[in-house]
Image 1 (tube, rainbow, N blue to C red):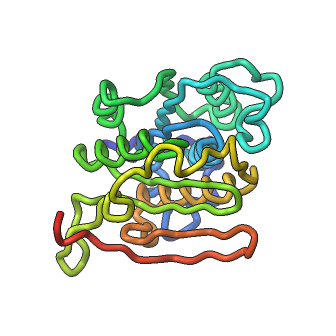
Image 2 (cartoon, rainbow, N blue to C red):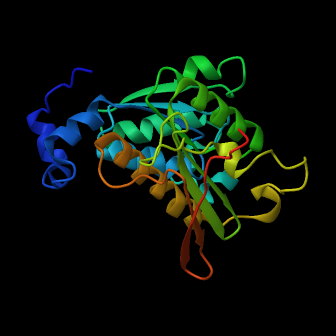
Length: 254
């Protein structure tokens, strides 16, 4: 992929990135060339979109068929009170344009499903799962694996959150195949077993914590900085202010 040089304005905008040896000018050019899809522009998607746009990701796709409602604003900080009733992709696109005019936005104002998932995901290098339902999570995981697109997936509920990075077509340093999403969560829970956030609630700031961590993982994947959360599930307990990480592996039977 040909990487465009940074303009004078971009060099000034991203100066704090460029001075980092782990990113530098080459890493910032990689961010500019990257195409990242964010599924959901709500609680998790809001901080992901804001920080990826601020970081200079050149093309950001957004998938969301919902409109902004008053109850969203406690956690979906990319939207404001004047946006109530607007499509979320339009509201988020306007916010990103105000934040960084160098970012190209592709808005998909429809629900992701089996009829369009392959087409949408194949246009991007990395996918961020900010969805709020198991149907979309498993669809994203299965489609991203088949298309060999990196997936950063996160989830929140009440005061707890988690995230991991999936690249199941790649191998570990010792030659083992990276795990799949289904190695971590083999099957969706039966309908009604896991209540939605609308029923049990969620602290707004929690979505900011997990969404920001998802954005950080995307930046690491693009620039090659650090060690992504591949084969590791990072869990956050907000009430105890505690992070824990567990390792998981590819099932030998798959």
